[in-house]
Image 1 (cartoon, rainbow, N blue to C red):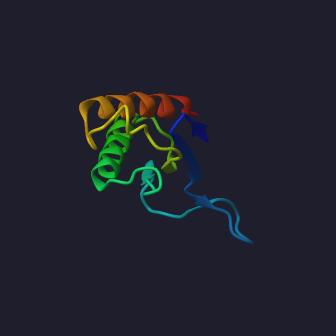
Image 2: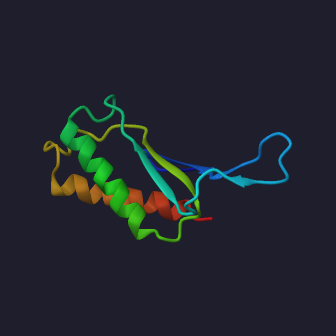
Length: 110
């Protein structure tokens, strides 16, 4: 797990070891990194802001093609200051999101 001021990245293996199994078994046929985003209304009230954050998460994750084959969930853990970013989807907010998400994914490398 990796953390920044506003985000947390959780990782879970795509293999399952059930009772009586001979070893890890693949849960899914496709062996690739899976990305999910969890953006609660508590921290991003406006839908425009939630969608902007979600799009930035997927765009930055796409840049980090070297992620291991696992399920990755990026969770927003605190809100951005509305005084600094008055617009719901401003270029300044997008730059701040991208920089923080790049630091998050860089810190999560295996």
